[in-house]
Length: 442
Image 1 (tube, rainbow, N blue to C red):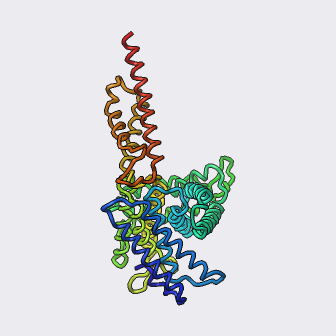
Image 2 (image 1 turned 120 degrees about the vertical axis):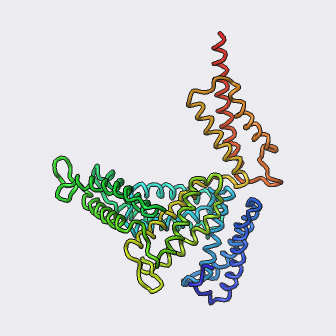
Image 3 (image 1 turned 90 degrees about the horizontal axis):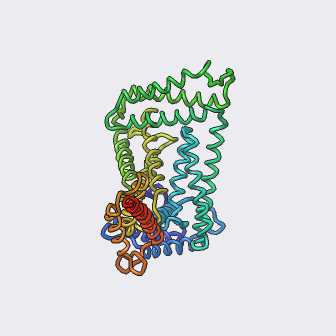
């Protein structure tokens, strides 16, 4: 379904591996779509081991041979991407396979930032931190998993690090207060692009943002950002160019008012739908996200992104999209990849089977912390609802484990640790309340 542009392998042994991987991929897709029961670790690990076995055969066949990418590579990539999301879903987020999908998304985001040249140091800091975390994951789990997979992930990590380094260099050195000005301009630009893709276009909102750009423009002297002594600040040219691009975009957005021409309307609607779905998931993800759901969104985005010719889309007559359309579609793609990245790094180290309990405990902890920060409770009686809920969750354990049928889902330590934190908070509040009641009776 996603490999028509790639030819089948000519080698008979590779063709056999392709057949086997296609069957595995289809099994993974079926498992992903089955909502009647939660995803079990043993089901995922069985398919993971089957993929690793095929990878071993492929490595032997291709050793020392440099081959052009064929359909086998694409199906293998799909298998690894799905397995990666499955590892997140079953709560094994700190193991090497879980890193595969995340590195794919980071690479996409970095490629887009490189292409557009519109980003801030904050964008890079988040991804840099995530890559450092993934480095630790690879070092700590490399003996547990296929050497091929670990090597593949390490290579992908190095590509991402190189892209990050180049982007940092492109930002260049900026003297204060230009880093803050640069950050503000990127924020305004993204706010305008968001306004441009809302269901109802707001001229007032874009004019307000344009006004902020003009205020920044007025702080320049002869087209330069200068210090109190009139010296041109380092980085002035870069920030001035960014300001120029922002002002130009504000004029275009106000002129077009969110209207996309018919020849690109279908693509726009698909991207709006994806962006809106992912936005909702980012708000409710703790309760509604199964990480494997991200696969379909990724595939759809990848397909639209890769359909560009020389960086742009062509309509049915082979005509390229005008600047306004191109930028609008690119914004939606980048925003959607950004949501996917956020949802992946927010994935909890808990199986989806235990997530309902984990989420209840997260809510209980927030409530208890809020009660504590607002001065505690007036009497022990006020803590009864919290204590009853905590005891009911604690009583669900069998020999200290949260069981689902005969299974012991992943994430026991995380759930038990959170339960212990809640009990500790409840205990502290009870002691404080007892002391308060005792003091009141003296």
